[in-house]
Image (cartoon, rainbow, N blue to C red; front, side, top):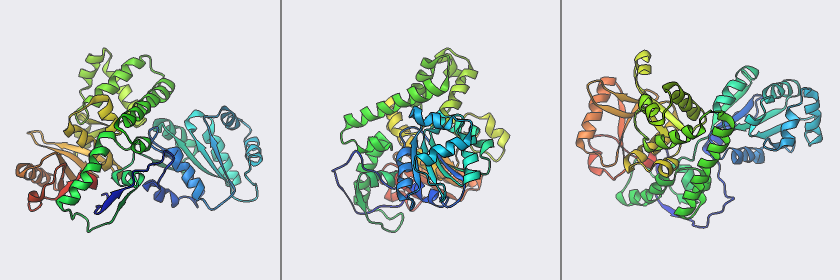
Length: 409
């Protein structure tokens, strides 16, 4: 869960070059001393390059090198089949051979030959690699054999709410978790409303005006479409992929009717499933599968679809406030593990179950009936840890059920 926040004030003097320490950095620091390659993947514009440079800046060694693989010269360096020549090139670029070298490389999906070279240089010369790329389906498949047991793979997502506050230079002090007055809630809600509407992409957060934020979101969508769909996807009907993306944005939080989507777009169900798989593996969407202790039963039922970021969902699909809030809750819950939903055959549903252990129902204005329904369903599932994620202040329900607010998940 995110830290509960109390007193806040904001410095409105934002900088386009401003950056913060991401929460993921703390996990990565534990792997810096090891020999394994560190790979960071995630959707475009979530801050992978910034994080890579931050790790490099904090590393207490001068024997390090940053290479942007969008540069054709750097691509050519790692397309060399004689790996000893690559080593010589790295030495010429400043990596000293007699002490441990650290090489940081961005956009590795652009160099298919890279994994074998990384393996050779790490095994034979002890070079530590930090790598980023935006296509998980590519990275996981490409590195699965060549770097088996020699890598740590991390995923970077849009900023969570605590990171959002840090990037906006909001100063906070911390009360006991879960303690809120209505005054504190109202102060945080102003910021949280912005976070839900425009999402967690760093450059969007740093924009000061609504028009600027929308323009940045449009640019992020265009970048994804051009660099992932057109360049990596190799689809025969790119316009259908585009139209499907917009359709999904308008249906965030809904169950996927593949047959209906296929009919609407004039393609086969197989084609729709192919496009969905690509969008999920490049982080544009997340598919939330039904929760069941019977895995065969789970696979037969339809998943729900959410976008990677509520700001993108809002820009492309203009969903109602309820589904948009639900999308934002999902994108933060998934940072903590596996997210499912539950639907009882005879009716009744739980929006999210986290790691099979915690249940969350998302409501804009919850009431006593919502609390009772959630408690009944959790009793059936034997889940003892559950609560309602509320968009509104709900002091009166606290005696009946655990209440979370969006900025706590």
